[in-house]
Length: 311
Length: 283
Image 1 (spheres, rainbow over the protein chains, first blue to last red):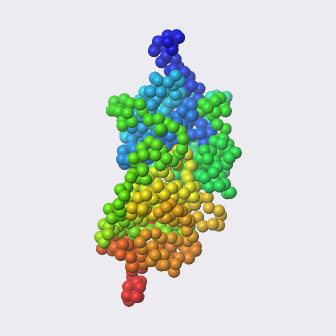
Image 2 (tube, each protein chain N blue to C red):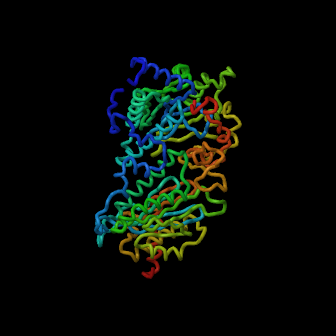
């Protein structure tokens, strides 16, 4: 006999769920909201290189909470599936439903067959031609997939943030209003802001913001960083970190990083191991700017929460 | 969860190769996950297959003050026949680079498609764009993979050009790379051309191109080179006012890669034909 003690399947599943839930709630929250022109991702994330939000395909975005190494490998798998499908069929044949399905099946299999479940919760968002066609899929650690309207909150104090959003969210907000609603909801429950207790908002350096904008041709995903984010957040929370950043370029799609002069092509600063072989510009959307905020955001979640857990 | 049905990925979700966090190259990934999709993995019968697919002809690229221009005529030929009058042979590779192709059209277009996905895939996985030299080198490896087919008459010879965001201050930001069928990768100074009419196009550029041309002069120089190629090479098509078909011209500058509208190119081509006509048949 390989099993010295008997544990009922119910008990096993319950233990795994509890383990995964604990891991996910330890981190910080991510909110995904629909707005008039698409889908808005807001993550509380002090790191500017270890992203919680990413691009999967032309009209499809990804957001995740939990253990960074686990959701990063799922993000890469999603990009690969989308690109293989788009290459072998047509770009229009890549849908959020296909990606969400693959995630659900993979997560479900890992949950039932492996000792340690993935401590992640994912959102796959797809932007359509009209607001009615936007799709938000929530995927949990056990492989369940739910198609939710309006908004999704994951990780950290998700229930509190959801409650706050339920009171303040309205469909069809413009980008600035949707961002304010989302940031207020995250700030109200953020452990980083609890010391203030005065209803302050998270500063731009603590936020990772991106949109899927239906008005953009082809690739809808765009990061909102630097001065563009500061001006959207208004003066109160723009802070001094973004003031000196060049406005132009900050919102360009697919703007590559601009390495410092003298950097060999394709190689980043070896002193910054988290830049994935590039400089601090953090790739598309970051714009050709020196990026002072990038340097400040270098502290990763791993340090704060211990281990590889990216809040 | 209504409406969620099984996708082609099967019951177990992602195959193991998809979850393997190694590499950011789409081509390398396909080689393990779906090698049949790679053009270079398909066996080519050991006969000359050169007359099975249309051949694209002349591509011209030149640098100018703000970046680089690339243009191509619209003709594809099969032996003595014109198989297409409106083929497009210049494509944007990504936001900051363009690729033009001469040679076996079927393989070349598939290669461009793969190359576009390759660059975008890297960008999404790494969150960074490849350097211009990295892009040029990656293309060289893809051409090298096609050597077997090239020896049986299905050669693909691209021309690659882009705006170098890492260019040193004072250096020209537009750069051009040419290739040979073995994957040799050569950076060109100023201008270059590939395809059957390249000899004539290059001779034309030799007289009209100068360092630091402005955008309008550079566009004229490029369209004129294609006109001269079409004048002397039967496989290169000239401007076709009857069908309103004009060369495809892409401009890559600090704003990214943009295709010039047909009206812009038609105006330039019209000026050139008018001037040549005014020279009373000596143009």
